[in-house]
Length: 275
Image (cartoon, rainbow, N blue to C red; front, side):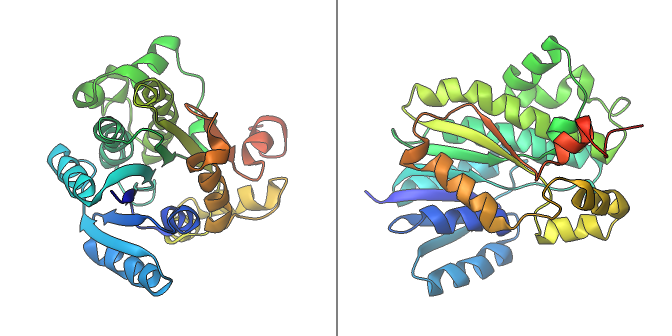
């Protein structure tokens, strides 16, 4: 059967990874807006890739299960690139938790039940998860292990405690890396691996929203004061994604790769540190 790589979220980062690993495989692009997936598919088809598109709402179990049905109908799922999400400037705290936290847990759960032996997945998290203050051991465990359908009912995630979109985003991205660490055990029983990448500012349409939104000054300051002194390109994240999904990453699972140009280092020990 054909090898299938599922790309959830047809944005710049997911596509950059797909281009690195998709040759000779069947790419399935899934996005909330089918026009986004179709537009990306045109570019990939013109470059010689075999591509199918479909719609998915990662906050809906029915929708994600329908995506899995489409994917398994195409062949053996050997790759999952989960890059769907919303940013703090795009959505309310509740929507961010539903899409970025619950949606990721749902995708990991459902695809973890069908991924082929030797397969691998990568979830795009964020540097923001690393800037959230330390949680308790009980909170870490809850984000990692709470059954998917009970996740949003956790006391720590209730609206009276999570009132800010950035806080919701940071919690979601911390939760993504913890969830992947726990899911790596279940995926491993199928002979598969899964990891997260936590990028810093990568120049994508989502990043441009942030760079022109209410937090633009803070984002510009991050770029100026981080050790690398610039934002990243999607292709740079694609390089790390290809490592994690390919044979050279065969001993890597349950890990989170922070690639933020040193922004987190500057927040902890440098000029971005709170005064």
